[in-house]
Amino acid sequence: MQLNLYRRRIWIYRSLVVVVAGLTLLSAIQPWWTGDVSSDFIGYVGTIEIYPYGLSHHGFDLAGYAFHLTADETPFYQTVIAWIYIITSIGIILLSAWIKGRKGSWLLGSIGFINIAYALIAVYIVIARRLNDFNISLQGYSLITTEIPVNEPVEIYSSLQFGYYLACVAGLLCVIFALFRNLILSNTKSNTWLR
Image 1 (cartoon, rainbow, N blue to C red):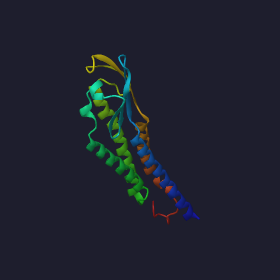
Image 2: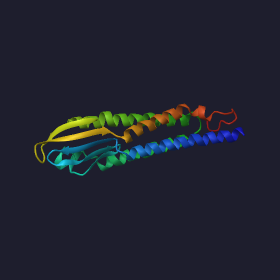
Image 3: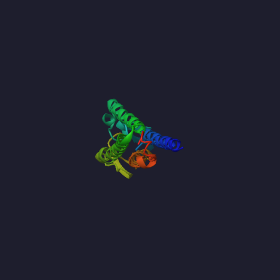
């Protein structure tokens, strides 16, 4: 009876870890930051989206209109490296639920901290610094003047997005599940094959 209860706890724990892995993947395919660009001359121009793997824009040619960002679009090799990191993180999260003892907890907690650090560094250092080069705020309203096609003001409404917050939550859940693993799985001393 106790063994069956313990096995159920193991599968509940593993299911929770799988959910966190799913949240991590979901955060990776959602934009982390967006900027809606408009001008009095044209109206709505388009949207810039930044994902954890790079820059995307819709509705206009950034290089020809607003920011001369052609060279700054994410190179393919960097996108590949980012996806390798994302997939490896998800794999480690899943693997940690099947590793026995403290190693599993340590692995899950470590990848949680790393993913939180990745999100914070990406947004508050990499993205914010690059936006600052163009006098664009990380969140809120910005008015900049473009040189191309004409010398006119361009409005940008920017904000952090759901994907960024979800990445932070998924990382935090990894840390929480790592810290409380023994509590979730605790049972009799004879059933220590996963703890």
